[in-house]
Structure formats: structure tokens, C-alpha cells
Length: 92
Image 1 (tube, one colour):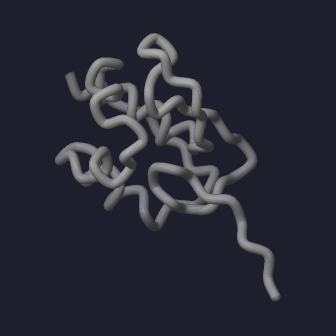
Image 2 (cartoon, one colour; image 1 turned 120 degrees about the horizontal axis):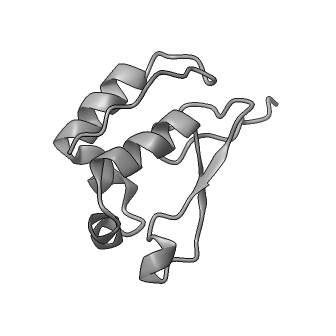
């Protein structure tokens, strides 16, 4: 039986050497839960959404992933290696 590798909360790819912890509901909005994400996924989340918008999404990963810019990012990142890194452009 093979051991399942931990995956990124956002893109669902296996995590690499560097892992960051994201608050689906921002700490400034009283969020406490954290989820593991790739650094590029974490930067992309914060480049595309304000804390108020993230608070409205809450921990609904599927709803966040369905947002147009995020869906485009997820299609692009899907076949990249776990430790892939690239500059992240702010959507706003």
C-alpha cells in the first residue's frame, strides 16, 4: 500500500519542499484554521482577492477555484512540478 503524499489545498498537486500555511478566512477576519499550500498558490490567492473577499469564500475551496482568474491559474499550474516557482502578477 503506497503512502499518499500531502496535497496543496488550492491546486491539489502534491506539496514540495516549501510549504506555506494559508488562512482560508483571514486572521484579520477572525479566521483560525490554516491549510497547506504551495508558495506560488498562496501568492496567487492574495494577488487576486482581498481579505474581505476571502472571508466571503470562507473555506469553500471549490468556490474560490471557480473564480475566473483562479480557474485559469489552476489550469496553467496543473502539470507543473511541486516546487515550481514563477513570478505572480497582481490581478488588480
